Length: 317
Image (tube, rainbow, N blue to C red):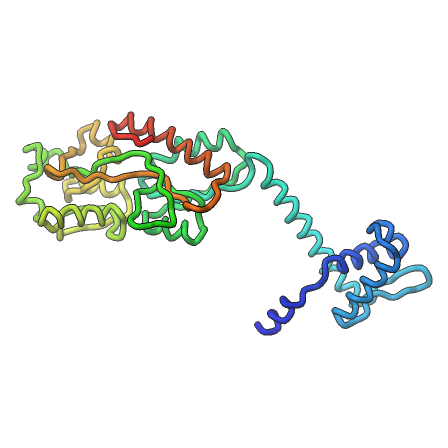
C-alpha cells in the first residue's frame, strides 16, 4: 500500500507519455515533432525527462532512426493502452453531453415497482430510448440509504421521517385498511370489531418497512397492540394467504384492486381514525437536477394524477 501511495504522489507526465508514444510510432524525432506541433528539442527534452523519471533507457538512436529498447517495447504497450482508455473516456463523456443519453437510477418500493412505475418508465423510454435506466427495489429506509450513498438518483417511495438533506415532492395520499376473506366475520358485519382486533392473526409487509412502522404507531395511539404477525416481502403472497382465510392483512386497497373487484377480498376501515400515507418522489435537496431526473419527476406527477383518479385517491400535483 505504501508503494502504491508513493507512485500515486509522483504520477507519470501525460505530455511526456504522448511524446514517447508518437516517437515510438514515427521512429523519428523530426516526424514526431511535426505531428505534435513541437520542436525537436522539446520532444528530446520530454523523452530525457521521462527516462530519468522511470529510471531506465527507453529509446536508442541509430543514425536518424529511433528504436525501442526492450524496456521501451514493454513500456510502449502500457502507454498505448493508457491513451486508448483516455480516448474512450473522452468519447464517453462527450456522449453523456448529448441530449437523451446518460443514465437514470431509480429506487422504488415493491408496490411502486409493480403498480406505479411501469407506465412512467414506459413514457420515459419513449422520450429517451438511449438513456440507461436501472431500478433498485427497496423499502423507504433502504432507499434513503441508497440515495445517501449515491447508489440511486431519485426514488418513488413513502415520505420518510426527518431527512433534512432530501426534498420530497408529493404525488398522492392513500389509506391503509383491513383486507379480509369474504367469509371472515368482519366482512359479514361490514366492520372490524374493535375488541377483536388484537386477537387476530395478521399477515403484514416486512417488519422493518415504513408501512409496518406506521401500522404499529397507529395501533399504539389507539391503545392496542397486534402481536400475532407473519411478515412477508411479497404483496401477492400476502393477498393469497388472506384469500385462503389464514389471516388478516393491512394494505392500501389499490394494491388489491383486482381482488376487491372480484370480491375475493373485502376492504374495511381500521377505525374511526384513518391511517393515511404520503407517496412522492425523493431526491437530494441541494444537488442540481439533471435532465433525466427532472423529466422523470414530471412524468411521475403526470402519472400520479391518472393513477389517483383511477383508484379514487387524492393527488397532490
